Image 1 (tube, one colour):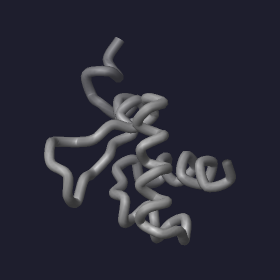
Image 2 (cartoon, rainbow, N blue to C red):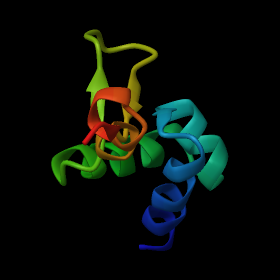
Image 3 (tube, rainbow, N blue to C red):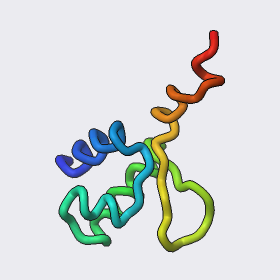
Image 4 (cartoon, one colour):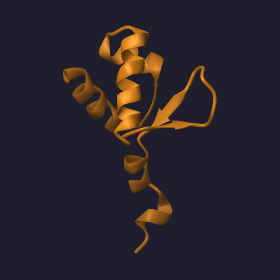
Length: 74
């Protein structure tokens, strides 16, 4: 649970992450980071950017949408 909260907090500073970055941030193995990232994906918090299975990037799209010029217009 603490790792999940730490990752969620980190997503506000860096809304695009990788499994490697997550592992470094949380000081966990890549396997553990992959599990946490997968849970965030299943919960709809982040989603994979692009395709592929190596060096995957994941975005916190709902947060990024706040900064989208089109979304900021009345």
